[in-house]
Structures are given as structure tokens and as C-alpha cells.
Amino acid sequence: MSLSPWIAGARPRTLPAAVVPVAIGTGVAISQRSFRPAEAVLALGVSLSLQIASNFSNDYSDGIRGTDERRAGPMRLVSSGLKTPTAVKRAAVGLFVLAAVLGLALAALTSYWLIAVGAGAILAGWLYTGGPKPYGYYGYGELFVFIFFGLVAVVGTAFVQTGHVDLAEFLVAVPVGLSSVCLLVVNNLRDIPSDAKSGKKTLAVRMGDRSTRVLYAVLVMLMFLFVSISGFWFHFAPLGLLAIPFSIQPLRSVLGGAIGKDLIPALGMTGRMQLALALFFSVGIAI
Image (cartoon, rainbow, N blue to C red; front, side, top):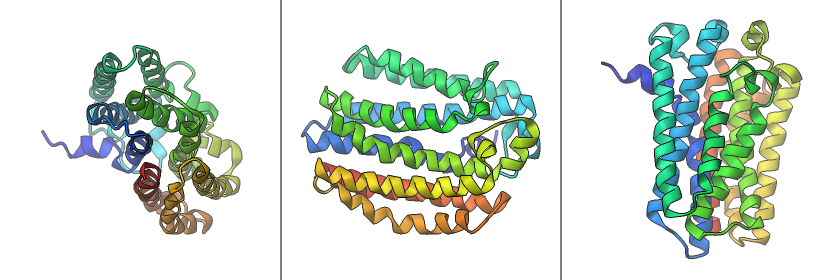
């Protein structure tokens, strides 16, 4: 059995959204001399499992609704017929279960309050496009991505290593959340025509093409603004501004009017911008 379709279905371009918050949260822990390798690895496992599970869940739910039939983006497992809806659903559930198991191990090492947080994250991943009223179909996807792949993931990663939560952790989580929202904005910008036809009222569909492109640029600027502000708490955090050059190409593509499949590279470039942010920002925070 070939793994290639499953790898493609996991949407590798979106995985930086799972890696970046763990890197930043770990940077916070290192800055407080509280780095715990086992907890950091478990947090990364939870984050990656949730991201991939959410991607498979999205593939399954959109596939059975017919939303993906006219999309311009990369191949989807269900709509392409490469995998059955049942197989994709099982993959999603399996990865959600893996995230739950890793999360339970993390809770056992730190605090059982994390179980409630993890349950909320799993529900958010499934209900994005699943259930009777998927919130992603009503324009709330960006809000939940900001919360769970920004605030919750960064603060949670820091907490399992430091044992406490403070305002500075929420502050450095803001640019991380904004960077993840950038990924979703590019994705939904590309899919405006097909989503509108299928009744999927994403924020991009509601705002329209031009306003969504402006939104992307504003998010990028706010991201680097908060990186700068973080310097008041973590003096070398502005090293994250070294990621600015990685934002130029995706901004050119989005603001230059790229549409459809021409926006797929912008998604990958946005992911690279995220990874550059993770590298420079986490190092700056750590030192």
C-alpha cells in the first residue's frame, strides 16, 4: 500500500502550524531554565497529531458534503476517490485518539487540567467542518485557529515545562496564532469560488477577494509588530524580525492578485515564514 496519498492528504504545508507554537513555548521554558525534553516532545506529538487529524477530518467532512469537488487546491483523498470516506474517517479518528493518548501522558506528568484543554482541542478539530453546524462553514475558522494553534498551544507547551502561566506567554503566543491564521487565510482565499458555490461561508467568502488579501497583509504586519513588542519581556525576542524576508514573496503573491492554483505556492511560502519565525523568535526568547 502506497503511503503517498496519505502523506499528501496530511497536507504537509500546514504542519508548521503545529511545530511553531511548541518551539515558541519551549523557548519560554528555556528562558526560565525549565526545559523538560520529555514534556516538549509529548507536546509536539500532541500538536502534530491534532493538526493531521484535523486535516483528515476536514478531508472527510468536506468530501462527503461535496464541498471539495470544484476546489483549486491540492488533491483531497475523498473527493479524488483515492480513499474511501470510511478510511479517511478512521485515519482522522485514529490520530485524534493518538493525540488523546499523548495528551493523557502529558497530563499525568504535569496537570490533569490538561485533559479538559485537550478535549476542547479535539472537538475543535472535528467540528471545524464536521457535525451538523461546522463552524468553519460560518466564518469562525480563523478565530479557533488563533485560539488553539496560538494561545493554547504556546501557553500549554510553556506550562507543561515551567508549571505556571503568565502574561508574557500569552503575549508571545499572539504572533504565533496570527501566523497560523495567515495559513488559513491563504487557503480560503484560494478556495473562495468553490466555497461560495458549495455554500461554505468562510471568512474569505464573507469578506470577498480584495478584503481577504488586505487581511493577509494586516495579519503579517501585526505578527511582526507583536514580535517587536515581545522585546519588553524577552529582550532578544525581536530576533524574530529576521523572518521578515520570508514574508515578502507570499505577500507579493497574495497582494499581486494570484488566484486558484497560483496561490498554492503562497501557502508553502507562508509555512516557511512560520518556520523562520519559529527559529528566530524561539531562539530570541530562549536567550
